[in-house]
Image (cartoon, rainbow, N blue to C red; front, side, top):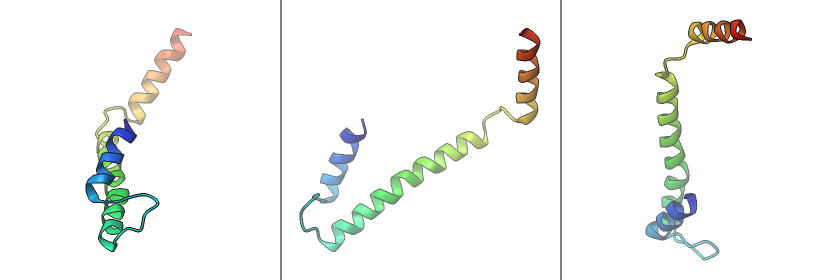
Length: 69
């Protein structure tokens, strides 16, 4: 999946591995290399931050599991 997404994206911005790239191509590569993971990290942070399992809930679940054992 990653290769199927990244390689067409790199081709779209004009980056060619192993070739001499222009300064614009390298800048675009940097934006992709930094930007995409940043968007993913921010999304993951938001999902984790709003996840309903907090410390109290986890302790209650652990007690319930221990009681079943």
